[in-house]
Each structure stands twice: as structure tokens, then as C-alpha cells.
Length: 289
Image 1: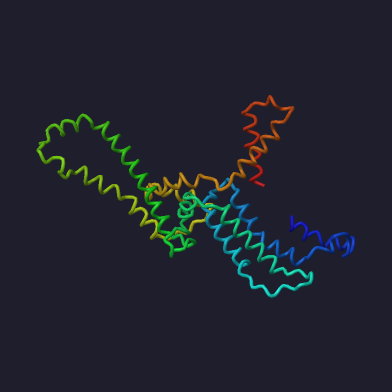
Image 2: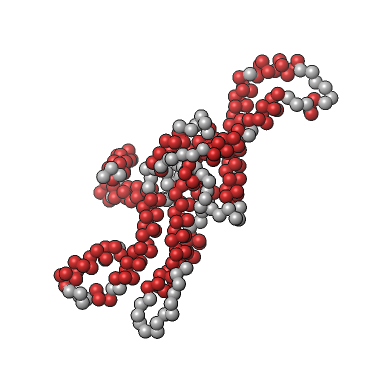
């Protein structure tokens, strides 16, 4: 809206003159400062409301970017404010920056999924946007390790159940023939050693991912993880779970809005499959323009 006003001012002045109506009360420098201040919020909204490629990994990045942007205004050095009515733009922007920073901390809460998502972006896997002094990076990595361990345990249980079902008859003969002593419960077995070795696969996977370098754009992120299912089976499974989450509900709200215009008062008997096809076509063609 402010950009529209800024673009319209020269034309209005050309037609009606510089003192037309309330036009003379618009502070053009303040208007430009407000546009610059709000630009990053507009960019974040546009990027995070997409639904054709992963967006959740950008939430942390945009929060850090916005916070650094606001801190520039918070740290502005203000000279003594004149007692007359002259507008002090820096003073106004400093107040605006302080209020926006408080709202950002209250409203823009990060979840564990946001932190995992940014780690799954190969360019940001070192988590440099988080301070190391308070151990925040370590906490995030610990949580990621917990999630990967859960995936590996679940995978091991599925394999064990499958192996038990297929080899039940042959294994039963081996078990019955095995010598049982009073100390059997403490004996080391080959199966125990294999289980102990396999449970740490995710650690090697995590170390290998962090040591390597990648040059992957957002458009290639899903394709990258789909090709890593053999090399990083647990990380790729975690990527499928996390990167499928949309950062914003804007796209679904747009779909509901379109559906509301399709199913109007004179079209209440329209078939559900027809509504689905119309919404699909609307979404497809609106994103190919």
C-alpha cells in the first residue's frame, strides 16, 4: 500500500499540483523509511506462503534476518529531539524497531521442527545462525540425534519382526540345541553384538553429512534428499517427515477461498470431484503465469 502511494505521488502532483488536498502532509522521507522497514516482512511473507517447494527450512533464516534488520533500528543513535513540530525520522523508526522486536519474540516462536528443517538444508547444516555460547546448537543436534535414534530403533524392530517371522522354524531348532547353563543370561551373543553395532549407524550418517559440502538450492532440496536414501537412510526419512510441513497456512486458506467462490448459492449441487478439479486447475494455472 505504501509503495502504491509512493508511486502515485508524482502523477498526482503533475495533475493537481504539489498542494493538492492532503498530499502536502505526506512526509516523503518518512514514507520511504517505512517502505524500507517493511520490505523484509513482505519478502518473508511471499517466500513462506509458497506450496510448490519446501518452505519450513526458511522460517529460522527469516526470523534471524528480520531480527538483525530490527536491531539496526533499535541501535540507532538519536540526537536531541527538537521541541518544535519537526519530524525526527530516526526517532520514529527507533520506536517502531523496538516495538516490532518485542512482537517478533512473542509471536514468532520457533519449534523443534523449524530447527531440524534448517539443519536439513545442506548449506546451513552447521547452524551458524544460532549462538554457540549458550549451547543452543548442541541442544538442536542432541534433539536431531534423538529423532534419528528413534527412526533407527523403529527400523531395527521392523527388520527383527520380519526376520523372526521368516526364520522362526530354522531358529527354533538352533535355540533348542544350544546348551543352556546357569550363567546363560550374562553370555555375549552374536545377535547382541550386531544389535549394538547397528544402533550407531545414525551417528556415522550424521557425521558424514556434516563433514561433506553441498551446493543445493531450495528448488533442488527434495530431489537431493530423494537421492540420499541409500547413503543417508535415516536423515532422508527425517527429511521426508519434516520438509513436507508447510511454513504457512496461506496456500490452504487460498484453496478454501477459491472453493467458497466455486460453491456459491446457485451452485450448491455441484459434484465434489468437479470442485476438486476446478480448484486443482486454478492452483496449477495461477502458478504457471
